[in-house]
Amino acid sequence: MKLFKQVGLCTVTGLLVLQTIGCSQQSAPTLTTITSASDSSTIPVTSTSNNIVLASASTTTSPSATIVARFKKMLTSSEKLPQATAYLKTNIKKVSPQTGTSLVLALENAQNKYMDAWTNKYTESIQKKLMNMYTSAEVYGDEDMDDMIKRAQEPALKKLLSNTQKSGYRIVNIEGYYMPIIDYDQYDAYDDYVTKDIDAYIDIMAEESDQPAMIDAGLVIGWDDLLERTLDLEQFIMKYPTSHRIADMKQNYQYAVYSVFYGADNTQLFDSLSKKIDPDAKKQYLAVLNDEDTAEDYPSSTLLSDLHGLMDLAAQSNDKMTAKLEAYRQQVAPLES
Image 1 (cartoon, one colour):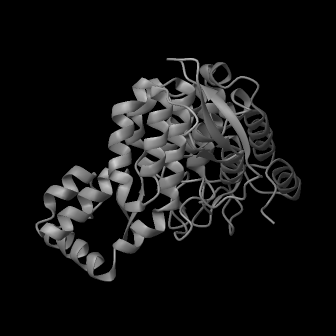
Image 2 (image 1 turned 180 degrees about the horizontal axis):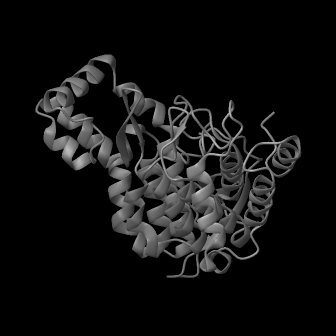
């Protein structure tokens, strides 16, 4: 069970939470305009609930329109992503937060769009070279990109890794296979130039990208961390109901809630044989629920209320699954259809 549905990375299963955008079903686009803070012109942007597509800016000649037009051209090819990311980091400070947000989300969309193209560059031959590189060094291989590039000795491999990084990706090892994912830490460069909801969205994406909650159908972070990440998603949904990424965050929240109440195939909240709750989960959930700061940090949380209910029922049954408890769990966190 994944913590979040992997939508953007269509060819990879069982990976991490939050590469969400590229493959989700989207509503029909509508044309809106975003006004630049530096002048009175408008920047056309095509938007959907999950997507941002930069429209033609040929009808305007403002500095913002020029940046949009040039950036749009750079997103037409996977090979131009290094140029696009460098251009955005240099020029985003020259546009309004609304336009900057559109540019950032357009970059993310492009990175998701070209994910397959970059994944295909990591051929069987490249896989063997990377595996040999780390086997000889007696390390697993989940290094940051700078260290990975330094470790590579073959010029062609070093160039591939470097271009991958410049395109906004990093390499992770999942079940022995090296593949690119979006490096949301790179998006830190845009924090001051996007709207508050997208700044918060990037933080959520970066946390899961840095440390996936689920790997190989098992929970690899603490139950308390799982709960707090899910609470952060809930707060995002309540605070930013009109965000361009709200549909994705709602979908991610649905999967996260499921994980909070059920765990994963290899890390079950209630053991399938003994029917007893995982002792670490009990301890960590109660620590969060009983923390005085929790209610203040996560006001009006339905998730906290639902989890309180689950833990109260578990306490009544000596921490063992019962028909009443299971009915409650399915009510607050329905199984996937």
